[in-house]
Length: 140
Image 1 (tube, rainbow, N blue to C red):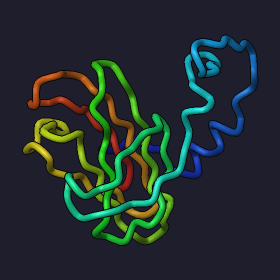
Image 2 (spheres, one colour):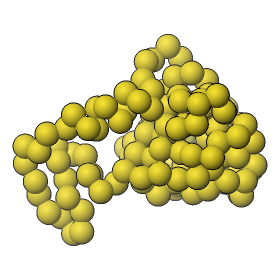
Image 3 (cartoon, rainbow, N blue to C red):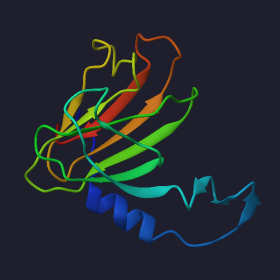
Image 4 (cartoon, rainbow, N blue to C red):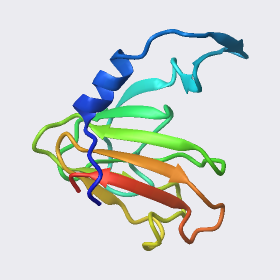
């Protein structure tokens, strides 16, 4: 859709973060709204919404993309944001919405394809299936 961000840029931005204030809430540490412990890696799995690997971190770098395997966003609350990066160069990753949801008004459970080293910023906008996830991607 014309936006410019990539996995390498996401990694650089996270590495450039400086600690200005820390608040402990439950078992998470926050820095200016970013949950520092909420960054992870996940291997792509399966070839459908029901068999794909479930994303658990709000910032996720996905490995093992091979053009068939995918990952699925979790059930979210309105306003949650997930950043997903395809860490595999030259291989497409299938990114699925949470079960029964849609991306940008497409059909329910339909994935978007993230090309190698591309990323997606996913915003959960509605609890209804229509337009549930608003997604901005680079390289799809």
